[in-house]
Amino acid sequence: MLTTLVAGTVAALGHAPFDWPIFTLIGLAAAIYVVLQADRPRQAGWRAWGLGVGYFGVTLSWLVEPFFVDAPRHGWMAPFALFFMAAGLALLWGIATYVAHRIARPSVRWLAIALAMTGAELVRGWLFTGFPWGNPGHVWIETPFAQLSAYIGASGLGGLTLLLSALGAHLASQRRGSRQQMAHAALFLAIGGVALTGGLYRGGQPLPPDRDVTVRLVQPNALQHLKWDRRHAFDFVRRQVDFTAADPMPGQPRPDLVIWPETAVPTLLEWADDVRDAIADAAQGVPVLFGVQRGDELQYYNSLALIGPDGQVQSTYDKHHLVPFGEYIPLGNWLERFGISAFASQAGNGYSAGPGARVLDTGAAGLALPLICYEAVFPRDIRAAPTRADWILHATNDAWFGDYSMPFQHLAQARFRAIEFGLPVIRVANTGISAVVDPRGALRASMSLGEAGYLDAALPSAAPPTPYARFGDLPLGLLITVALCTLFVRRTPKAR
Image (cartoon, rainbow, N blue to C red):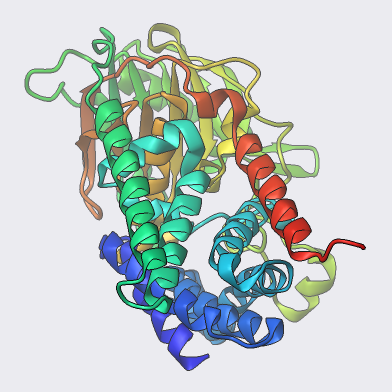
């Protein structure tokens, strides 16, 4: 298990901030090679569990950061949270590998492992509301392979990564120079070559010209330990008001829409009349979208509000896919007795979930599909929209999670949503990285992490709907189910 644990840490280096995808292939292949040598299903499962612990432990190391925002109160929980999260997610890989070892003949066990682990990754995106962060497919965001997610999604790209890794492990376990090894080597090169060619082809296709619309992204850089401090909170509001009123950036017209990040206004929307008036005055006739908390009787929501030139609220969106233990606490009333409460919620002990995905009419900028923070991790939250938007708005506050890996990983996932759906993404983040992403996932413009300022940029046009936008992960799920059932049937002796 120690060998697979180390291999898992190597595999994690494909993710930001390292961005070395070749290490993901090497680490996964090395671990699967060790798994293939297991004599019993249980042994294979434990070895795969070790792979997952190493992989998720490094990839999700940023999970400790929120516990140190208020270190005297929460710091003691940090190592336990990281270990139990990594160990829990690794169980899915361990169980999948255990099943693969049981149902498949030794000659095709490598294929069964790749299929089963891909299936486990799909399950991970739904189980307990889902947590698909760190899918192996995410490591390819800076390469042409990322364009394949328009057809198979990031989950399918993760499956392709596991397939190539398992095939590489199978190659290493075969007799050197044998016909079987040569045939499987040719298969490896063929799969990789076709995938690369397809990615290059799609990435080279022309995009429609940008729209004659300019958006302003406001990034206040409010540090989390000061963001809600009464002595500083409204200093950040004034900073955002000043950025909203500022002259256009060189070469850019005045913006048609101004966007502030998640929870940019540190009070409830219904108490923010003076703030809304100040924002409207600064915007000089331009609508503004800003993050704010909203109360409705005894329920509170993490929301976005769109105000018009008169400062009146035109529409709102309430976040519906909440972060467990961050924005709400399962069994919250009981756990509150032990001092455990939702980190991110400043109103009450947790947020309530909104009714679901919706599209906002922003005027000249067209129809926007809002996603607040964590929601950008889930492609299904985009597919749930009642109609196709012109662009995706990702408003977030990543200040909770430091400046090492999480903000970069979060940005990578937002870029995958652009590719998967053929829609531009406008990402506005409190401390960064705010960015304009085109429908191919390329960064048109961005602001650095930890920078306070604003960014004016043209709004890219949407590309045609992609196959993934139409079908999601359904084809991949069906393929895995049929393939695993076939391997099981072929393993079962025929009755005589």
